[in-house]
Length: 394
Image (cartoon, rainbow, N blue to C red; front, top):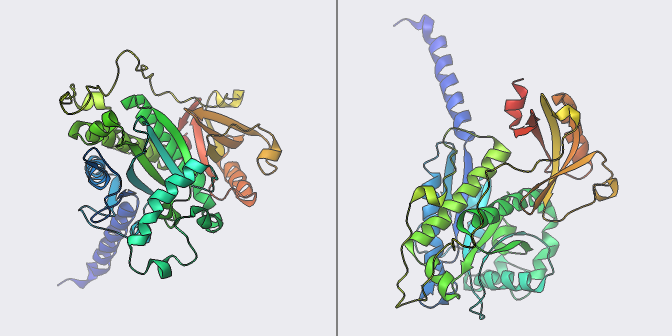
């Protein structure tokens, strides 16, 4: 054997292992959580069972995402089993997931209630939001040793978790951006009524250390909406919209890659089944008379200065919020030169404007010292938003 080439061979093998590891780590990892399970049925109305619908949609979302070579999917459950709330978050934490998406169905004694809403972890004192959190959090009483495991937390008073959330504020802006994307997809692609992006102290979100959201897909207590949620076609449409939102979020915050395709429900299948009128009131998923025609996806970016017209421009995104803030330093911890862009009902606030990437990194550092720990650099090229990598090619 010729041992002279061994170092070279070992070097090449090592290089392959390192390259392969880097490639694997570069994948966008999504943790999907199907609410409830086993003896925890969730909401039950008109024969529709929340735990079954949530699992069916999660598996469909996962199947769509798994076709993307740039995405890894982690499930908290893939069968009808009961998983503790903390363990659901821990599964995502151990996997080092980029985002955590928990999927549920809504319900209300008022059977006329309808529409979708997506929650982020927050300190809202809104009574209806706290009631929603209370309903979901009470599942901890089904867990063994829950009094020791959740010491100091009262599921009947979800406000008791509020004092523990400050450490996780760094994920709030990204969570709102993801939630807004999901709600926009429900509106634009499915014609659903949006109840908005909301904040509430959900225990399942509290312990997940990453951007995370809880989706209420619709009301199974509503006869029409419940029938859609419990139908194969309805679940596939919802799953596609959620998957589209996740891919759009990935492209915006982590860069686009091969396979990051957005597929509208109308492209997936040309027809929709008719629900049996003998069992439920006749309904269609989208009213062709009232559905707004979706415009091409051209996001409303901030008005660009003359420097934005050509070449690459870098800014620092500070936050994303449904609230409209006056662009004054007092609203941004003393930072000036603030701009804003609107994407649906979501407002993105940005700091600075420079063609120098090193200067952009200095602005990012300054923003972080001002308390914006989750701020990040974004780029525009010839007036259009692009990935930072694309802007740096110039």
